[in-house]
Figure 1 (tube, each protein chain N blue to C red):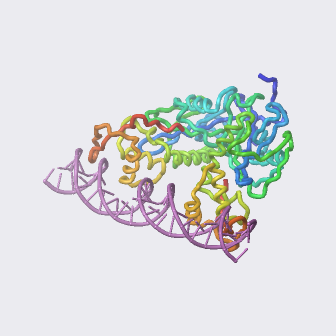
Figure 2 (figure 1 turned 45 degrees about the horizontal axis):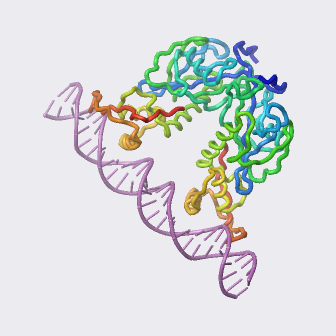
Length: 225
Length: 225
DNA sequence: TCACTTGACGTACACCTGACACTAACCCTA
DNA sequence: TAGGGTTAGTGTCAGGTGTACGTCAAGTGA
């Protein structure tokens, strides 16, 4: 376009993305992990991720890695870059800078399997994960913090649930993300006051008293990450 | 260390840092800008920044660029990485990814001059800056947002003031950063309730009634960014 | 000494938050 | 069909927080 070249002092580094993808399973907040098939850290668990390709945007790379390593297909709006990890010694192969992304999986995306250079892909406990490769534990910790921050001022929790859901289910999502218990009376008060929910009229039978089903209110947009 | 090499699919990109450094001058929030001496965007204003050197940490690079381009010396604790800009077309020279940093200049750091590849360094209005090179306007906008967020739950504003200061002066810092007016009575109440200030006993004369001078209370640590 | 400027202070109200205990509705089993 | 088990659903009060707002105090300078 211009004939301009990179100046000689421009350090060339490996550019990577990593993705901390979250979903709810059985009342627990899970994070999507892969088992590495290559050195370094072969057979260790890690966040899905990999190198950005030439001409590829950062968020595209994140989506691609997620797709090829875990078969999870995601829309760009559920993805947010949150921190860049570039410490000199973080990867034994050389200077590799990783732009870490946070992903929220809409309800329904569940089955995963390994692919690419990974042996295995699995949903594992986000708050009590196994030992992770590289500095991925630090990345995960920061991702959880960001997720909790976002929870407060977005309707993020709705993403983790199907179209219709009960209030106790929604409360479960909050509790799983915050990793602590909430008072149900205060929770209901707070949520209903926001008027982002409309009762669907139906109820869900289960073990005890049937619960009212809600859905997201019209013209309430879900938080874009 | 291991004999491991970067895999062939590892895209090599130029790695840069940019710094949005803020200070208060004359009741206005200013940002430190440099006038570029090289193509592309020669003679345009830009945020100080440049390429990371081999073996150099990101925050070290940010401090070094600030020092060489603007003669501003800064401690690491006043620096925070806040976003990474990696869009494909953002730099005409090729794929250059920039890790943007926010810097708060303690009061007293004022005189600047160009250096390195820059013609000039100057403090200019942060909320109404001149036209900026590359995507630096987007970087600046995001930096301002982050600064405003930080203001709320840190004692960040104290950094912008000398050791002793009056409450109206402190309020001025808040107003300059938030770019809006605050009620002085509520401001006092809020600030004094935090008990991070101690009256120095002295007063400062000026046009109207002399104001009480305050200093940061003992054992109140300033927010690390 | 009077007008002007700026600092300092208190009150009243709306709102939000968190603590807390009981009733309602349904299922299952004896 | 009655009763026990289980989960859903509700109201109130106290304390704190944020905001709006009027008034007096202490200087300066004409």
